[in-house]
Image (cartoon, rainbow, N blue to C red; front, side, top):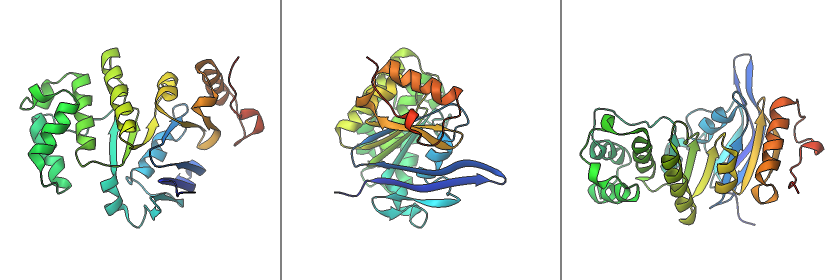
Length: 251
């Protein structure tokens, strides 16, 4: 059996007296897609920041392609692309200038060719020399996608990327994620949108109070069942991986 591309092993994160994550375990195979679900404050963004090498676990470890993220973060970051509801782009730069800045950070040689390609992929070629601050929310998120993939990462980390988008922009983003999956990229997605979770991922975990309360495959549940599990997780104190928390398909 091949080694999973992402391995999260007994990961805990504490902030002083507050424990945000309690011994989280999860794996994502190469080309797979994991969705992280749960209420606000469950630890979803904390876990995503750890996988993105933006923070370090208090205990446990995260392996990317078998390599320890804590000791090799600088090198492994080249394999990661991060998309969130925050664009991480500069308002007073043009689309081209923003992408050139990030391309230079990764030492990309064929910068202009790469910029042209990713802007075409997100349908922003005609706005290449317009200031970012003139873009709509949906256009800003499309440029954020271009930023995240300009260095051709094998792993994409998406932290609430649908926040604040209208229906058309959400559909565009979902189509982009499906395209990335078709290209064989590995996806980790944090979202409150259960319908998108089912459509865009292979497996899911529910976090509750920093623990994995439920995990399963999206093929084993439908939307009503997932909604019911979500209510169970958010309204009840479900023990970690308890038998009654196992997913089942509603009939």
